Image (tube, rainbow, N blue to C red; front, top):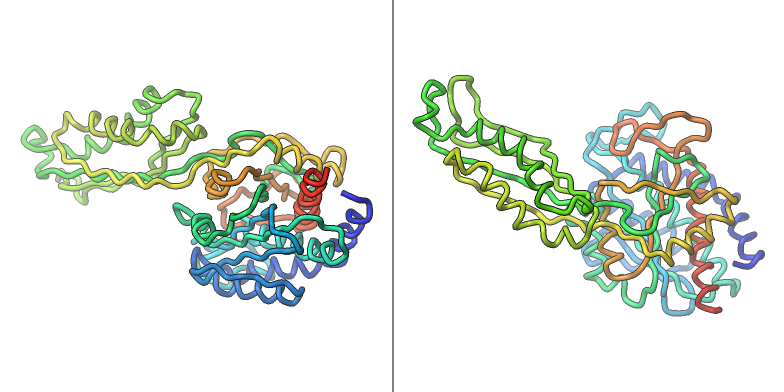
Length: 397
């Protein structure tokens, strides 16, 4: 990256800080759920067109892609648009105005970061300082299994790309720092529903029927352990049930029951082989109770597996922020559909620090009071605009 280009990025961030913060707050105030991000998509399209760019909406009507520069795009920068079905618990001027919906995962920040990076890269392209094409990818429905990343792929949004980069807010990291990791950084994530059924009966005579509650109790308590003994522990497999329903009276053995949960793992190969193993474990555990079993295992998203070269490029960009900006980040068992992109194009997801400097704690993601120190937007813009130039320099070398 030339000194002139870096100076242009720094100047842009200083000039546009309030605008990008305002955009983030506008989106935060008006959150939209997956595949309903119509207002957000329109807002972004207008901002890009005002900069002389030509955004292209995705076929579904939400989300868009926008190429920058005079050459075919080889680098992609991705942001996700959707909010969560969670009520906003913050007392701030930009609190969500949509009942039961808020940006509790930081996607509003991701949008502002990628838009800002795109706008400054457009300026650099006009000045002859950008020697590659860059594609902005604003995707819908990251929170919806199996993820709106597949919408982008189906629409040809990755065609021609050689690298993909993205950031994700991380309240465990201070603003100004960037968490990086080679290899799996997030987990494969599936949803699981197991329905049991039997004839029902009186709790005084469980031997004359199928004791469905005992069966569902064993299912929830034992299947995770059985599965963990049938899959290589290095896969980081984690089955957790979060919802169980059975019965409506204390002296009646119910006829039906259901347990719902999530299955997560860090190993891509294990994710492919585990479904029949899980199916067998469930059926074997409940078999002694004589209940009927219906398993609905919905495949979700693969793990995000960061490419070593892409992480090195992000580290080079982060070093222009400060000597210690890049830091190691832990693996997460959270799911992230950016993994679908990295199955097609090498790239990396960086953890963007959003915790206020000096603050000992921060509210975690997916909590009603989650918020960020908005200085993180400047950091994210500089990181992603910078890594596009780092990649350009590597291609030109």
